[in-house]
Image (cartoon, rainbow, N blue to C red; front, top):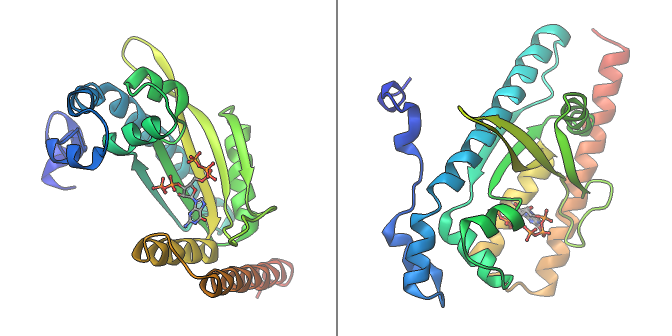
Length: 236
Ligand code: 0O2
């Protein structure tokens, strides 16, 4: 455990509280409005961090339990992120919504994000079912595995409400949960990198090749699933 974890406030020193330098990224927003927003986002970010913490704990428990009890861990790895205050403000401004924490809480469901990467497609739906079974409310499902995006992107996206038990109240915190296989994650990570480098402008041939790569990744998933099913039927 690192030294930050031994402080009385746990790992909170690592938490990305609003930083002045981020103001540069707010574009056309009025500077005073932007600064005021960023000062007021502390509570919003904290409660979303707790939502992520709660969910990560559940996922880690299921991962270990399945590994122990079934000799198969449906979770390869988990990552999480909290949206930066300037990105929250920019998203609200883009949508023509009031740029304040109340509005962010009301309108944005991706302030907290957790990404679960699974070995097989069946594991993606297994984890979704575990969420369902534990009375965690799923408020939205976008199944980009059943219906991939036109560019080839595949993942299962859920918006869930995670109960966070604070000292004096319980809050339902929206978390965007993305579930995908290793092959889907590989494609999404590289596609993101390529588009980021090209500033979002990509020639048509590039788009077609990326889509073909997504199909190839889906083919690998199908092949691996079939091997997995065979190994379950014919162990040893
Ligand atoms: P970040 O930094 O990952 O959070 P919305 O977010 O609601 O305005 P949308 O498109 O309705 O937009 O949401 P959707 O479809 O649920 O997708 C949101 C997130 O999914 C994105 O978050 C990405 O993380 C991921 N995603 C969706 N489509 C693609 C894609 O084509 N390629 C890749 N690599 N990732 C994708 P953000 O906000 O873009 O970024």
